[in-house]
Image (cartoon, rainbow, N blue to C red; front, side):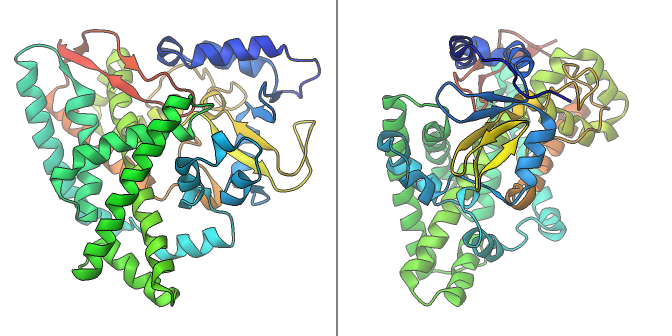
Length: 416
């Protein structure tokens, strides 16, 4: 277990550490920065205000504790930094399901039901398997001509095809939705630049138009797709059709934003980590039944989201540090997943570890799409193992310069 901060933390050291993390090089290997951060204590004053939480035990406790809140629309509007928290993109995120607090969160989450219960997942699996086989055939074709980018050809395609088909969206729109998602996510990053916020706002505006048009279309021609079902559900819940449409609009937009960026990372990073750990890959070759365990270890070792925001609902004590009501804390999940108090030899990638993690959150805001993300990863890795997966990384992977949301921009592979 870590100990409370007992000595002042050098602000310049922290600023330098996060500046390094924001670079492509820092993203390529963030573990040294996380080691330094954890050495400062379980709760560390953030240079920009609030606190950073580094230990697994405290991150887990906060995520599961209903007294801690998410930074919702109301909280964002109370901030002085309007340029950061009151932009169109930030306001859109503040109204999405992960950024709602009870009782509104309870109502909205209840309206979608159990999206991916066993029956619906079983129905999706054949389609996912067919998509994986098609994408890997295309990838193999590219490999015959030289190194091929696994990110562009497989890991960025599978999630958008899967969620697009599920929602009944035209395949011709998939590329647009994927690109808009990459731009929109900037507003959820740690201190995005002015230009990044402008990109995020522009993407948000286009996504709003897209899903407004979609809802109008599903009103005219309802079906059995999720958007049509949500419209019928909200018509029963809410007599004001404009309110019902707004609720479904937020749900549909959220599903796209949540399904693409994070799942793409899990898929590409699973391949990267296995190719960088040939002994672990050999374990999967000998026992493909370990694939689900390997996916959980990927989620622990390098989660798609490394920083999660929470707000104190009341004055509280956290790891020996006073946190006033309304103050934001940043849960450093990427560091917590390498906490030696929780994991033996935490920097070792071990597909047989079978340890808990925080990649899908905990408590009331546990990720709705966790089952689908795991299924996509399982189908993809199973197919790669069956095909041999005799590949190697031909050039160093390239990372987006972020802190919170991980993204492999390119993963060029060649036959081994």
